[in-house]
Amino acid sequence: MDLNDMKIGTIILWENQPCQVIWSNRMRTAQRKPVMQTKLRNVITGKVYEYSFKFGEKIDEADVSREKAGFLYADDSGTHFMNQETFETVDISKEVTQEQEKFLKEGMEVSILRFNGQPVSIELPIKVELKVTEAPPSTVGNSGGNVTKPVKLETGLTVNAPMFIKEGDTLRVDTRTGEYVERVAQ
Image (tube, rainbow, N blue to C red; front, top):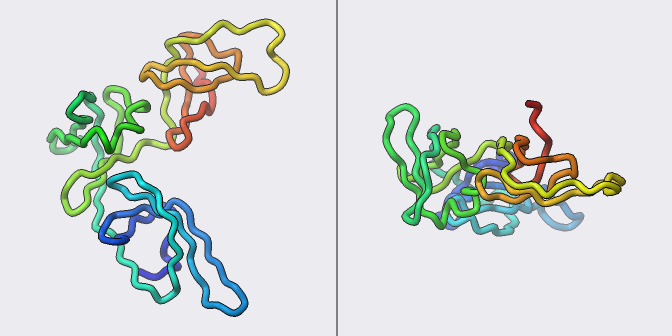
């Protein structure tokens, strides 16, 4: 694989681990050869690394496959999904999915990443819709500017939302940042 093919979202094999490119910048200085600065997220552990690849350096694309699955439930032993085509249950350890569980609700479709045939991680949709279960009342006089309040969603996730959001509303939330995007029209 050539450095020019290394785009955001590409999964490469780096130090024998599958890592997804989450940021890249081609840098060239006057006297030196160009380098590709990157931020890589280990697909298995979630750890983020910064590394500068030199042009001509050998890069292998990771043998990663994706399969659609529906979220079933999470418990102490892990997070459980069902493959949409084979109806096989796929279990992923709690350490891997812990940060993503707050966006999962029963039946939600996700992509399971398999590295060398083993399920190692999940990819969530970029935005999910979750119902508000707890919201403090809006206070009069707090409407100026960009005033927010913390609201609790059906999965236990707490996000800062505008003052007009109330219990029972459905919100769209960005799974990459965990932030409120918009209220879904009812």
